[in-house]
Length: 297
Length: 297
Image (cartoon, rainbow over all chains, first blue to last red; front, side, top):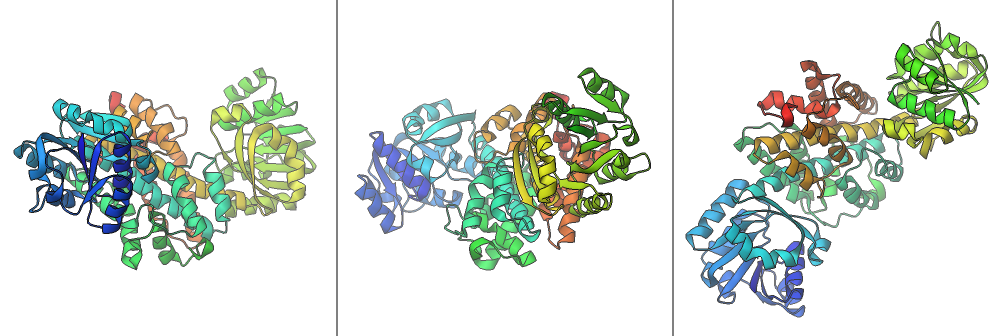
């Protein structure tokens, strides 16, 4: 198929490469010239705006940071919509509010396009290997049209229903857990440091006990190593826990733990750490208590 | 060795049976006649008060609910202390404040007894199999004396240091993670229900994604099945997150997520659910929102 990937960040680039490997003709849409050059070097095509995509593009996979970027790239003044084939399918993997997924799906329908709400779990490495997990919602027609693309990028596919927004809802609930788990990992690590436990020993014990979480095990090594390289940045959870609050208010449900965790990510960002790895939400605890982090991290 | 186990609850009974299997002479100390009868039927001895333990008991493993029960059973008026051999070792596995562990160790020293601060991770099944995880602190002499007992009950032993209280500190930090993970599992599950996601599907997706935790995977099946059988009760985390708050104040460290999670367990207990399974901290979210739980759980 003629496929476009919007956003050549770590997830988009990995998925674009997986699509190339599966034999699709792939054009990446990305403002950063260095990312475009890297994708061209890998055998893809690359453009800076939607209006330059190949005419007759049949599927578009969207890995923008949020809904507004997705809407602009597809339906904006220099957007991709006029270049798409009749009955082309939009596969939208950006994390967004369910209401935004429904709005984008309505705009797609107005343009005669199919829409799959397709948020994703799994990091850059799994994107490169075509091993992402997708939480899908869309009509049977949209799913059928998207199938060859989904097969190339995902190892695991969960069907949430046929109404766009259901995938986004599941992803937002997932991010509630992910965000709170990172923040509480930082809370426990920081309390342990303050109470005199060697942080490496704390890590070793927790990851062998019932207090473990996927996020504790994945993120706390960054704190132990003092490595702030943003595998996923603090600002992503400032956004995603914000989406949790939005969804919760929309359905009238209180989320006290997510709300508290959100404030801790906001604090880390407020101190100028929004661009570093999200494990460094621990900067909020450092500011609150004056602890020293390992390796002066 | 002549060993006493104080408290034949699920953890104590399991460990007492593991000690019998390892060839030790074991007496259980337990107020409930049915638990004493069960242990006698399994080949052990059982008494209702410490003063009735065999004279010359060489090691005492303590699985009481808290420090006050441990102090009463050993040093109280009908306590075990006078029955113990010179240089007997106390191996105290109750979860308690580090300050209480230090106090008990000081009382032990005043009686000429050795002391190992030995909090535990692992449930009833691992206790029965002699496969517990222990977080130890104590003098080399105490550790050496305790070794044959520890070997019989634990698969994994972490040495935290030689000062009683260091094991308790690690356990309290561990319980911060465990308690928050259970509460946030309930928050996510309840939000998902309110937002219209099938709870079984939510469970399946989270346990295959980065939002997973050991506690989410272990406890949420109880909610899905509507099974309130207390594998570990709400009141345990009312107590343990209370210990987290105590430790945090003692070392001057703020724990906003643990404090919020504590309030949710307190709410479940306030509604009369302190004795049911701790996954039913979700009753707090039910009360706050009016959601219906699976199987009317």
